[in-house]
Length: 220
Image 1 (cartoon, rainbow, N blue to C red):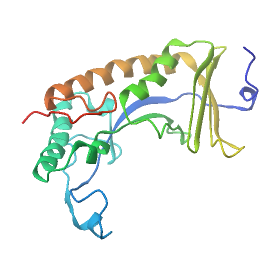
Image 2 (image 1 turned 90 degrees about the vertical axis):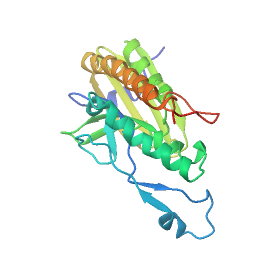
Image 3 (image 1 turned 135 degrees about the vertical axis):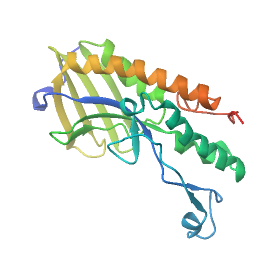
Image 4 (image 1 turned 45 degrees about the vertical axis):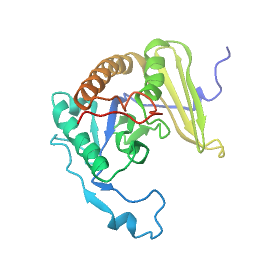
């Protein structure tokens, strides 16, 4: 397979931090999916209590932050399940409350690789597994509306090209040392799976691993 022509145009980055993020919301909307009055999106809400976990960003709890605080994260989700029951809301109306995100970023350089279309762990693990297991050649490729991601491994480095398929200009073109990233990814896969297993045990249903097609049965 020929070397992709975009590799020489990447910028060196010393490292990327890998983490799985549980998205956190500060309010619960219990109104109809399509409200007649747009103001209902604000009026028909109740506040949500954030997990009692020290976090760097109020809108997410990372896997690293959740370790040792699994019960607190489960309590956050339990209040969502309770409110959905009280207001007769099906899971489809609250599924976004259980979405995940993959973060690959370098805080010092304020550089991040985004995967905005991946909401479940099975989607995210496609990337993590490929990063951990592919030491040379094409690691990963996907394209969605407004988002194109190419990942390649070569000569001990991992190359990332993120762009808009409707725009010729790359949004991100970087290369990082492979081995430190792979070590992080392997540890992340293990901790993420353990976290999801614990949350599933606490709530009685796994709504994080993959897209839920039938109404889950949570613990009372």
